[in-house]
Length: 165
Image (cartoon, rainbow, N blue to C red; front, side):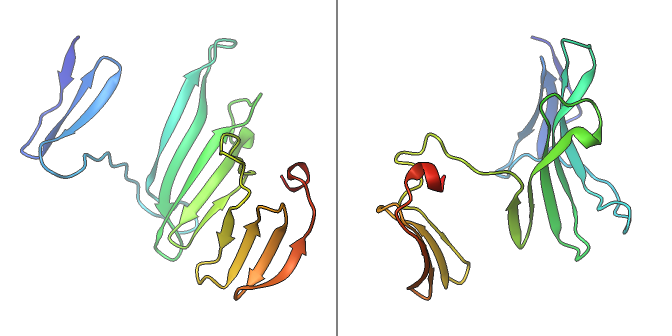
């Protein structure tokens, strides 16, 4: 297999091997790929993106099917997104859908979350606020109950799994 090597240094090397780009660290620190762009308030958060493109066998066009972005927020923190091409989509931004967004204060899912292979579903699971005061529990008795400071305040009783999920 042929290998194209870029100039290496004492910290590592980057090379192309077949259809792979490899960053190999020579020190006990993770290898990194950096993508950079200047921040222009009102226009761009800077940073960069990794795009995953696939050549469509039907029309022969390259399509961006997934995009992971990283930028700076207005408050000068980091933020990111995972964006995918919607089914049947054409090559334009209107047919891309943000799946998840994150920054230092939140992770926001833009689509329903499911775990079909989770043993027993999510019965017995809880969602808890960062300070622990609010808890939403999917109880073993199939009741969905909201607790505040350990006291139940709202319950949906007697729902079967098909009604909850």
